[in-house]
Amino acid sequence: MPSLRALPAFHDNYIWMLADTGARTALVVDPGAAQPVLDALERDGLTLSALLLTHHHADHIGGVAELASQFPGATIFAPHDERIPLAHRRVAHGDAAQIDSPVARFEVLEVHGHTRSHIAYYGEGLLFCGDTLFSLGCGRLFEGTPAQMLASLDRLAALPGNTQVCCGHEYTLANATFALTVEPDNAALLTRTAHARAQRARGEPTLPARLADECAANPFLRVDAIPDAQIPWSAQANRSRREDRFAALRTAKDNFRA
Image: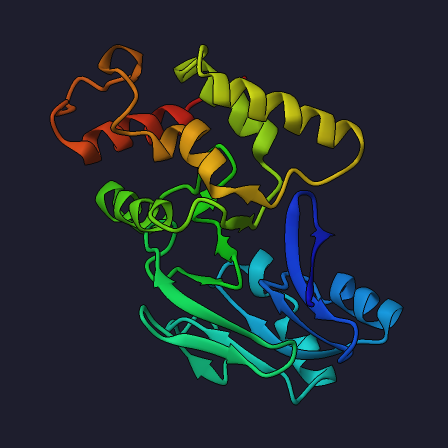
């Protein structure tokens, strides 16, 4: 049975690895740096068989060229985006990434908003969502609109509740600080925050997170549940529109200082 690992990189990135120690193969998701992957492969005597890329930002693809040169047989899956120069298979919504070893199949989901071509990979009970969905938060809108990001988050929230959410960054506690200003009495949020604090105190990742827990605690997945009085509205907002509710939350988070 393949095992999931979060490989820390840079200040707060995670490179996700799914490894089959019996077959001695592994795939990785969003290798922003090559060295953490190379170290993990060498430590366990693994060969890299595939790379899954969610979007073009350097902290998610910066290690691809070196890994491809050392493992030329590894298949690189990437969205249709010319800013990602190395790819064997360009994939879009509804496509599948099939890997022979470790044996895995992932459905490709379009989750635009953070960037114009961002995708996610869902399968094997796992969701590799890059910088679209974070634990207790979501990605900034660098290239997309609030409506696009909300549609992307709706798509992810509709997945089975036991899905393990594998985000690209360790942002849980920072996101919790903002989320608690919106829903200070949300019991699920308070429980998730306490658990995350204990995990970090032990030096553990707060990820993966269970999707059902996120739907209960993450304000960006609770656009329809948060009372109007608790949303930090802008003067121009149309309170009857879901995308305006989401946009008000996202703008407030952008401007938030703990």
